[in-house]
Length: 302
Ligand code: PEP
Ligand code: MG
View 1: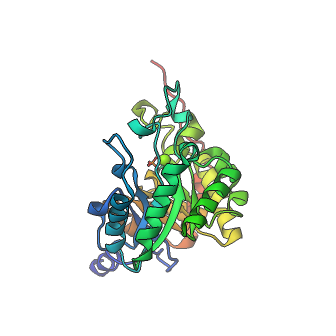
View 2: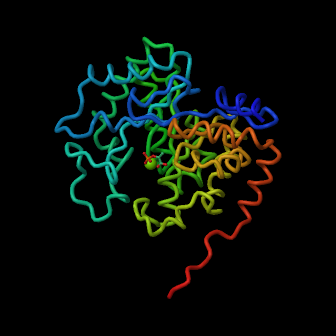
């Protein structure tokens, strides 16, 4: 018992029978980096842009990215380009008054309208990446169509960033995972937003927690389709939303075929334990059961 604990408190993620599943951290700055991390699956870059009236300049950005990369030599760092709008409003990038900001000009939609801001960010990431031993990948938030993803990938390649992916946060993107993978190098499923948009349930509305539960079979079915498309294309498909941090759901996600799980660094040990307690066959069995569940029971109205 003691030995198993020791064996699972560090090191790469794997199932009881040795199937590797990368366990990455979600970070917002170098302060969040834990030296034990296998890598970073989601570097949220919004922090750099918050509480200011102008976008950060090139040098400031290069320094912030370089600090994170330097803390993770030899490891993968997936940088998400600016995800402004909706629950992450930025005064200098306001899309104007919107009746439904979550359904408005946010994420990559805003980046397409303010390509100057995106291009500067990609150039700064590329510059920081040139002088580092980290393996730097980039991905776009709130991708809805293959054309949007292709536009982003072209911008990344132009900036000298060879590995570019799309977040799957919108059901339309999940439904088109196979086509998306013909233009991007990897997918990363953001279950916080994917739940919100799949269930038409505001992610900030605590009263709808039952619909936002990552065990919901409709969410798992979308993830399953993405993972299957990834396996067919031979490209990585990870999960970087809160679902990945849930030790009850992590084995299910592995059973569906996702190749990495990215979460708050403090959640990694428990998820590593959960995977080490199941074989890949167990995970597949749990996934099949979860997919055939009925979802939330009806509410009893008093
Ligand atoms: C997500 O939507 O699941 C996600 C990881 O991105 P964020 O929580 O930053 O919107
Ligand atoms: Mg999101």
